Length: 61
View (cartoon, rainbow, N blue to C red):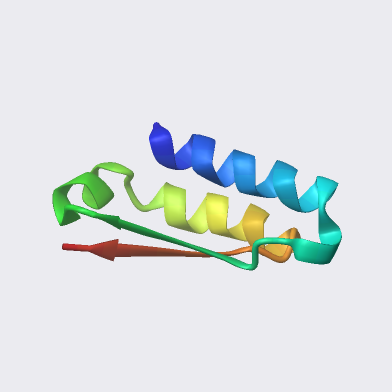
């Protein structure tokens, strides 16, 4: 759930501050947590983020 909030906050920040917009978010988490997001999260959320010029990376540890 925290990832969704962080993505939302970054998108809102970018809309309000285009001159200093965040271009990439990197999430570092246990691989088991990333796996729980399922295959739809990366596909759906990254598609939305790309439309708003934000890159997302999920890195498992």
